[in-house]
Length: 186
Image (cartoon, rainbow, N blue to C red; front, top):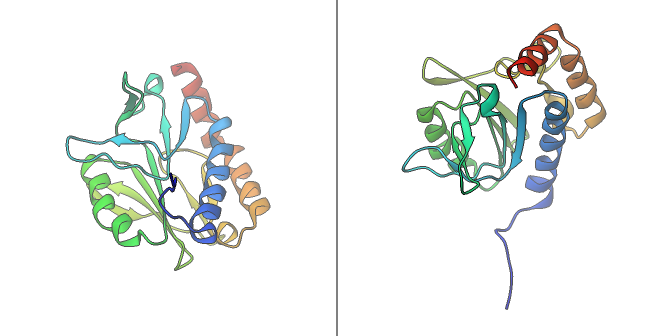
């Protein structure tokens, strides 16, 4: 018997996946009420059960939009969905993106591996708008205070810089206020 999973290339998928996960894991362990998952089945609605590469959610106890069903699957809308798009760019920028938009996923990040590009969208008035990259090359989440991404550093595998910039976000007054609010809610 031959056992095989869907083929994923190391440099185009596995390595970017691990970098994004490390960045988000660092955020999650410092932010009460946040939860992080790799490749969960998400029951968005009756027709859509995607399996995004990564989700960062707020726990239902602190006002998160998704919940863990009795059978262990995630139901509802994750606050942040991440897709690593190598061979799946058309799917991740097409059908999946539209399903996430229709269901109200607040933020959607796509790492287009072949283009060496990261697009981070925020849902505004029912449409996805790219979050701005500031003059220092940083994108800041609108849903998760203090979740800051040094885009070029991530793309160049300069993870020390990615962690340094995230650390600045974690020390920001916005993150401190969020931690206090989430701590009270849980």
